Image (cartoon, rainbow, N blue to C red):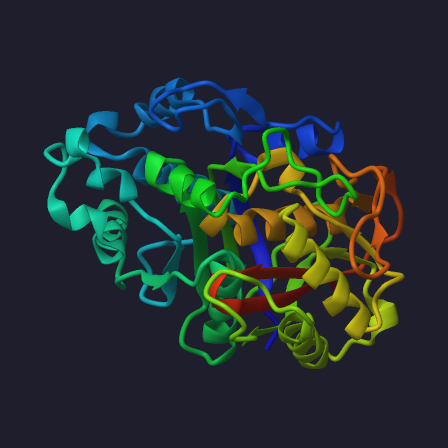
Length: 382
């Protein structure tokens, strides 16, 4: 059974819908800016933030912002817009919502916000229940939280649930926000760059964080977008079990996920037109990915990272970057890797350095995260 992508929405530092985000991506505009706000970090950091004022203004059209956290507002808005764009009936017994996040409402742990909302909202199940109650969903949402592959893994899980015949439509929403907890965690690893990140570059020195939310609609029924249809052709996940935070030193875990995804999609290496990689711009992650790509024999396949535009958006990354990959397929456009200048990774890979038009039919999207988790999903035009 084919699993079609029938709708989407992206809310990020680049815009509040997919079209606005794609327009800025194609123009090479970044949403990463130097943030000098004491509540996030004692020193200025480059980051990609969603405009809180605009978020409240837009959300106030459907409900009172005071009743919902920033993440809840983003998720509700994104799911609503994506469902409307696809005609999905969220309340139908054959419909399911999957929530992807790494931290959820972690801001509710802060002293000044503990009394604003019920304590259960800080738990991921509490977040899922809140969204269920808002939309009056038939099923309790499924939560997928597996570090930075969460969004991509959730898409793979959703596709399998449709293929197994359990559901006809699945909405996958991925989201995370930036808080002192999140920022200080990455600072403790000394993994944040003092400047906007430079994926795969010889001078890369760390990642840039971002916050965002995105929803992708999966369906057993085809619905054309721009007169073309895209399917989830195949996917796989793996774990290299190397270290709680450090990636594999050989790239074998991600390679296994890539190999199995290609097998699931019944595609050969030379049929993949481009790779949308994880590309965090940390020394170890980018090196690991270059090794995995070479193990897969895909070193000549054009590859990009989107982190230079929206930062690393954690649980939203796999969802947003999958949507961008699908739209790239539909628009026949390869998006350049912003921040990249000179190749500086362990093995040779073919970085997309300029945005350009070309014939595109198949994309490999990969992600890796803490704990050695890896995921790979292939999107194909049919």
